[in-house]
Image 1 (cartoon, rainbow, N blue to C red):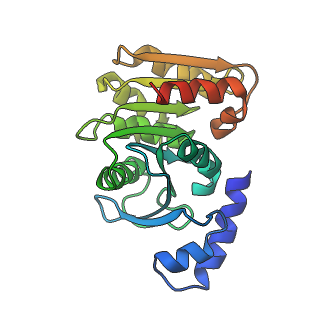
Image 2 (cartoon, one colour):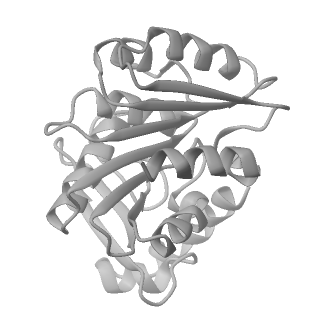
Length: 233
């Protein structure tokens, strides 16, 4: 997986460079000219790194899966930026260049990214997360105020290290979409359970053939189209 390779390269580069956004830009193997490295502080003090792309009034926070980093979803972020969105792909705490804070509170990292996009001019904010990132965005969507506008989970488990997406969707009315591979166990069953439990009246699930997981679902034309059409409403 490209995201896993990026983690190692990024951490090695960071170990040999000074801190600060300029140095992180130089160390980041995924960033291109015109893309902005950002440093965020979560509500519990976690230091969160990300890359911001685009300049639209609709912002999209992107959250990666386990053993990955912001590089995993940066190509999708570029697709969004090219379509007029402002996208922010982040490293969750404990991955890539992000650290500190309470263990596994990835929802707080998402909230920090939402605040950044709003500060940068986004008047509408959407969330997309892969696997554990899907759990994180579902939990974050249930607590962020003002509410985010839409949320997408790509193979997000119902529960992950204390993050309870099942409980979150039962109290959230944010429009939500679930995408999962039919044979991706146990995530396929989790996606069905989450869809049924979601309190939002605006909810749907796309179950794709095979066992693709997380962000790889965006490599399938039906998966990519389903997500893009939802975000563009």
